[in-house]
Structure formats: structure tokens, C-alpha cells
Length: 84
Image (cartoon, rainbow, N blue to C red):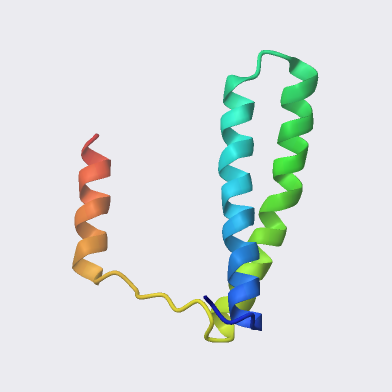
């Protein structure tokens, strides 16, 4: 059982918001009702900034570490997508 601490709670919220963004995006793509699409798009637009703020907070406070990709790997990916 995981300890109930700030890091775990905030990380859970971050993952929930990320999942909510994914689900909302899928619902937008699958809906044929303009009003529903507008509502979902509006909701998504409200979730995204909050998700990003939480991500930045966690990262800046060492609770969500990231590893930068090697520069050559980035160059390779960019080169592949430029050819497409």
C-alpha cells in the first residue's frame, strides 16, 4: 500500500487529469453533436492549463523527475518527420 503523502496524492491527480484530457479528446472526436463537441472542447481547454500547472509544480519540486532525451536522438526524430 502506498503512503498517503503530497507527492503521491498530487501525482495521482496529475495522472487523473492526463486521463481526463485523453478521454475528453476521444469524446470530441467521436461526438456528432455540435453542442456536445463545444462543451467538451471548452472543458478540455479548462483542464489543460491546470494539468500543466500541476506538472510544472511537481517537476520543479522534484516530485516528477524527467530525463532529457539525448540531442542526437532529438535530431534523428526531427529528421524523420521532416522527410514525411
